[in-house]
Image 1 (tube, rainbow, N blue to C red):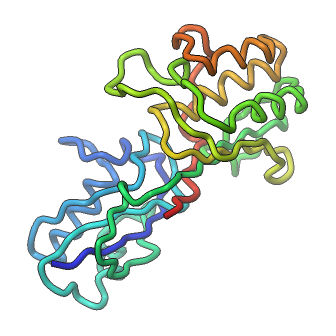
Image 2: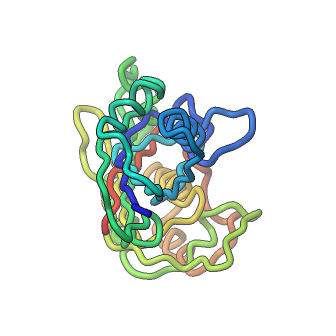
Length: 243
């Protein structure tokens, strides 16, 4: 049996997330269906990090096991079968590799467009936020994130998670082109909606609707109701997985 690594990029706009769901178009479903057509047998994928509906990926990683040698043009065959919003960017033999268990960290980027009127080219790519923002306040919030914290406030109350501590390795805001701010965060693992709730809450701090000390208190295991809104998915990108 051989193990193979798939590197992927996709526009999440028309996907109902990563995980296969009956009757819905998902990244896992489309890829597994394409693999089955090419290989003539069902193949199950393991992924580094499940993305939700509408979330994009610049550098997703998956793995699968196969009991025979794949055809040499497998990546090209898969790309011919998937839609234009999903691309296999790399495929290689990787003995013993597990895309999820082997991942040491994941890195996400959330893009916010601050100019008004908005650019039509950022539609579906960034959250339009034409309100006043205190860049220093955003930076101060991001500076509180590195380290291990309880992120209960930043994930839905109805959850399958049993552990809410996550170790954040790096976090910060930066300019990402004219009129675009980007928040990037890298952690050992993420809770569902964690990045999007962090962004929604930090934007409230940057807009003067909550204070920095209140944001700090949220990192101690406050309830979800104490944090801000969940930012929409179309501004979020998985940009790296570290092994």
